Every structure is written in structure tokens, then in C-alpha cells.
Image (cartoon, rainbow over all chains, first blue to last red; front, side, top):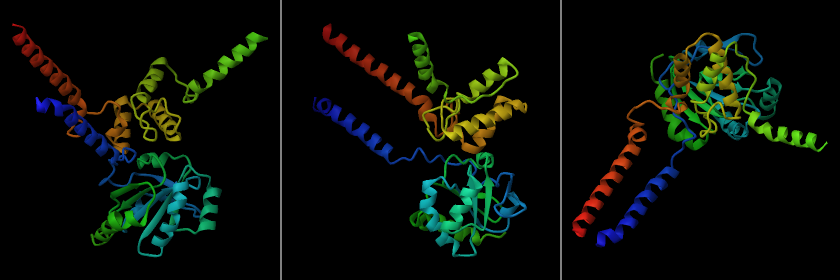
Length: 177
Length: 132
């Protein structure tokens, strides 16, 4: 009889625990199936350069690829941190300018500084679909062999960098090319 | 005059319905219905409770364009779905395949149904004994 009286509370506690746990999930961060897959084949114009960027630009060094746009507010928030990262010249940082007007992107880089060694222009957003991009900003870490090893969705912060990305980048740097 | 206003008002109310439709031309009704079926079984990753067919998100529109081009280039439904899954994962499917991660999704409701039937069975049997 005592157990019966307590049953509603037990059920309530169980449901409550599950719902509470549900609050800590991030369904907006969809895990990428491209992890441990090679960089997709592509060809895109590069800002202020005449040649085209391809998947071969990712071979031989650890690369941080940042998907951004001039119209994206969160990208503006992480811009300063990207500039801090760019002070280390041994880290190759590429930008993928997603569905943007080239003039607007150039203005952002001119006014706020340019952390990217190369900015690829994906005006149509079709190459981004090949990379599984569904929002900006997104950041990929690609190893020396051109294999995608990590994807971060949302703004790059010092906390995310220190906890997750920097240890991985340090590890990948020691891998053979 | 009143009728014209009424007609205009009705048209205005119909606007949001039309909003998520881009203008794609199909050479046959069959390809058109393939396009409609495909886009309505794929999830928009930006507004995750809407299909690619329903969503107004720019990404959904781009994915509709991608699916349209792939249909025109002669890709089968399976190839198109496989392409999108290789980019965005099983999450893009509203009808996910059976795997370790989705087993609760597939059999959870059955478990609830069975435990309900089980509870009902024992409850009724107990009452029968009391009544007798």
C-alpha cells in the first residue's frame, strides 16, 4: 500500500529526470558524418587571387576551416578570437565565405582584420552543402592528409579552443604528413 | 466592389501557404511527385521540426534546388537520399533506419503499449478474483 502511494512521485521523479537531462542536449548541433572522411572535391574562386581553391589546398598541413559570412552576427563575435589564433603563423586558417556578397565580405576583413590565409567564395552555398554546412559559423579541423577530423558548430570561443580543438591540433601536428 | 476586396483579401491570406514553394518546372507529373515526396521526407536542419518541403529557411531552399538538379540529372531517389545522408547524417531523414541509436525510437512505443496491456491484464485479473 505504501509503495502504491509513492508510485506517482516515483513516476514524476523519473519523468522529471529524463526531461531535465533533455534540457542539457543540443539537438541543433547535428553530428557530422564527414568526420574521418576526406575533404569533398570542390573548386572555388579565392578572394583577391586568380587561381581556384580545391581539396588539394588542404594537403600537407593542419588546417582550420572557418565557414562565415558578413551577414552573420555570431561570426562577427568570433572574429576577434580568430585574429588571436592567426597570430600563430604555423596554423593554417582558411575562410569559406558562405552565401555572401564579395564586396561586403571584403569590407569586414578590411575593417576588422583578416585572420584567413585564404578566403574561398561560395556565393551559391553549394560547396558548403558538400561539407554538410547548415549554418554559420562552423569550424572544421582538417589533418595533414586532408581528412576532416573535427567539426565545431557555433562560435569559436577560447573555452572551446582550449578544451577541444587545441589538444586535437597539437596531436595532428605530430602526425606524419 | 465588395467582391473584389474579398477576393484580394483571400489571395493575401493564401500568400504564406505559397511561401515555401520555389518555382521548379518538371517535364512530367512523375518527376514532380518524386520531388514532392523526397522533399517532404527530409528534415530541414535549421528548423528541425519542418521538412525541407515546408521550411522557409534559406538552407531548405538550397537543398530543394540541389534535389531538383539531381532529379533532372537522372539520379534515383536512393542516390539523392544517400548523397544527403553522407553530408548531414541520418538526422536529415524523417524515417530513420534501424540502428543502435534509433532502437528506442522504433520499439519504445511498442514497449509502452505492451506494458499498458500487461498492466491492464493484471488489474482485470485481480478484480475478477475479488468479485468472485
